[in-house]
Structure formats: structure tokens, C-alpha cells
Length: 179
Ligand code: SF4
Image 1 (cartoon, helix red, strand yellow):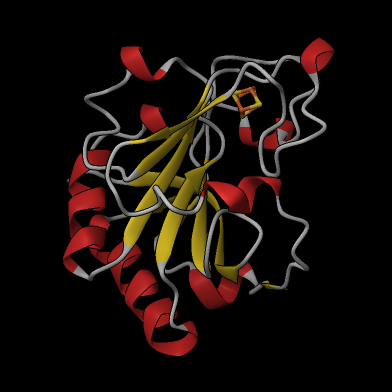
Image 2 (spheres, rainbow, N blue to C red):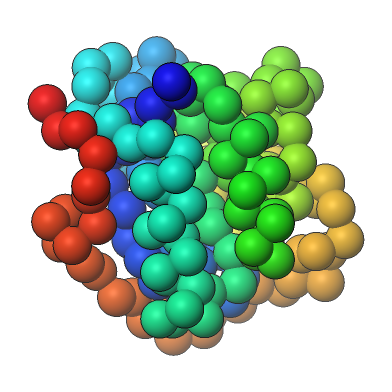
């Protein structure tokens, strides 16, 4: 059975893309950007191992409780997770959108990111720091719309809107194996 290696989940935030979103930080990244903002999520070792059913039930809870519009995948490197397109399909079946980060070029990981509505791609380059666009770390990173869902939300990345976040503890969220 496929298990997703999850480092952290935030059930509702306005800081990880347009609208209110649940955000999943996946564990593991082999890109090792200098200045990575989440170095503890780079280790390729099990963290919270969750089945697709466990993850989708957390997303359903967030939808019911916070009326989230979608889910953001970040990390870590989301494309290392087997079964990501199946998870994306389950999220779409709930009527929610999906935005994913990747430190790779989108062209290299189209299969893994199949079904995503938007992809933010490319490694973090510390000498090309992004000063203008929200959410992106460096100017080489691209915002790629793969559906119409967020096509009219590009202004979000350049707006200074006040952000709110609801952080929940690990024990409130994780039901999967933790090693
Ligand atoms: S791709 Fe992202 S998680 Fe991976 S090292 Fe670079 S900044 Fe960190």
C-alpha cells in the first residue's frame, strides 16, 4: 500500500496560495538548495507515513471545518511521493483545487504533477532572491497555470494582503505511522 511521507500539515492557511488552503509539507528532498527554508524536511527518511485514505480524511475535515478552497503541496520535494496523481484526483473529487511546489523543472516531472491546477517550479537560488512575488523564493521560479482554476488569481502573488493562519498540532492531524 502506498504511504505518503508527511512532515507537517497545516489545516487552513491563507499564506500558501490564493484562498484558504490546507498545506502538506512532504518529507524528503534530494535537491539541497543552499539556503533552503525547510532543511529539516530534506532528510530522506520516514516521518509521518500516511495512506491516501488517512490524508483524504484530514482534507475532508479541513473542508468541513474551514471551507478551504484547495490544497498546496510543498516540502521537501512533493514529486518524490509515489501516488501523488491519485491523491490529486481524490482532492479534485472533493471539488478542491491543487497547487504544488517542485524544486525540479515542471517539464521533468509532468507525470508526478499530473492533475495539478498550478505548479510553482524550480530550485531556490539564494543569489536570485525574489523581492516582488509572494510565496516564491527566487526569481528563476515559475508560476505555471495548468487549468483555468487560478488563471485569474495571478494578482495574489503580487498583493500585500494580510495573511492569517490556523496551525494545528501534529497530534490533532496525524493518524498514520510515525517513526
Ligand atoms: S527544493 Fe525546496 S525543499 Fe528542496 S532543498 Fe530546495 S528549497 Fe529546500
